[in-house]
Image 1: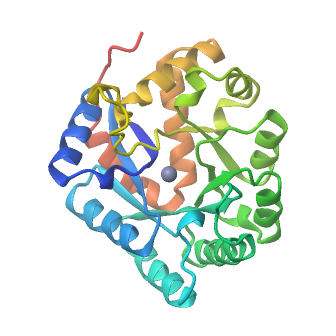
Image 2: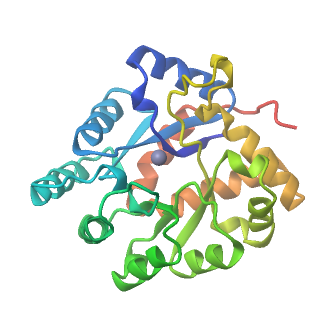
Length: 273
Ligand SMILES: [Zn+2]
């Protein structure tokens, strides 16, 4: 078993703890995780950590809630330079966010469009964030011809028609822990093909949860796999194999190197069923 967590922020933990988190993940068949930067600074950190531990891959970008108000070109240029490092496998975490108090939407859109262009010039997939910005964000992705690189809708929580439009535009649907409890999301999983699904935890330190063991970590991917298998009426093994094949397709020319690493940290069997 060699699952990969598509989207995490575990770089927010101290380095020694990151290693323990990955060790715990490895024991249950989660071979590695992708770190998603949200600023130039954290994107730099993602690349450095990915350089230090082969179980980590980096994705770089500026989160819509963290966009700079000045000096935007320099920030984009810095992300572009980082994107050329071999450990970087995607442009993320980028997107559009309409939450109350979010930065100016026009500015968010300009920066999102610049990142899509950057993804196309570096031939890296886009893993995007959307909060209250459907369906508009899909119009932007379509307008910028983002299907040329494709990618994934991170932490998908939309409805079925939104899921199908994402798929039509060349994007996979990344499912996280809400699928364990939200019926609408379970319905999405039941209706879209397994070929269009990826999984993630979006994990980060959660001090607001008193019990440390309750903090979401990449190891919890196995719960998501079990839920997807139950919804689809199939085995966890079959789900894991298909998810891996979806990943390999998404990461195109990087997939060979990634597969080698994931194999090295895989386990033969896990206590799934
Ligand atoms: Zn995130």
